[in-house]
Image (cartoon, rainbow, N blue to C red):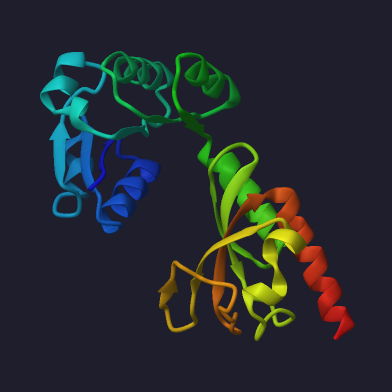
Length: 224
């Protein structure tokens, strides 16, 4: 079972901590505010009231035992950078830090954070892509170019098998799972697996191939 630390309980930190917990992960939450921590009591594994810029406090909270840490400190850029540095020096295997602007993000990358997120910018980009590509329901960025996308099964390909569609050759995408309309998740789809209307597919690929998928599906719909 993965063990995560979330440092800072604003809207972003609360959402990350709650979601990780709901996914069955162990979650340690650290914040200096008792009121903010109270929101997550009974939801996450452990809450610790401490000043995260204090290395001794982080050690005492057991930060060295986590698999990854998410620095979700709000507007205090100095504290965010300092905490990220301390985590790096303590040897936390994977560090994700929230940035409030591009300059902040640049500094966090320079000090060695494994991933830097700008929540507002990323959400804005996601909303824009969902408007242009209506088949994309959700996405998870794996790198600057590649992500996991949840796609609605369009009418044009419903009723066909993965073998008939040949996703890799035709769309440049790899299908890794299918969620049926009733909620069942098939994590080992085969060439004989048939796509049904109302289900969704999870694929690995880049934005260019997602756009290619949209264009080819539209052509298939016009050809019907």
